Image (cartoon, rainbow, N blue to C red; front, side, top):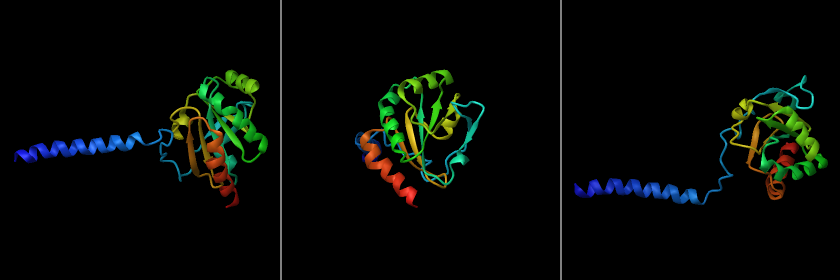
Length: 177
């Protein structure tokens, strides 16, 4: 009886230590998204450059595209921005910006100063669309296929490595299918 009373807490402790040990070796940027393999959440938002124009996810059906969540106040967005500008010049894939919890004037000024890699950028002033997409913070980048299904989510700044080894190969594969 005494062994049983001691064994149960010891077993629970061992399981918890196992979970903590596994957690130490996981990359925090590789947070699995429940949206991978599911249709992209629909939105209809104002275009940052043309506020009277509405842009919807349905506008991109039939093409592979990236959704990049960014903001003028985001320090990490400055890190990835030159890569996005270069990617846009290559015309490998349309990049749609989701200007997240930002003021329009500040977003426009930021793009004017740093370059505008976006085919278009939509305004998510209250962050509701970001919540629908499962955004943890900015920047985040999603790959969406021709059918409007999310195929990949990159948390944090896009790096040259992630772009060359993961994102662009996936985009090319999806464009061929």
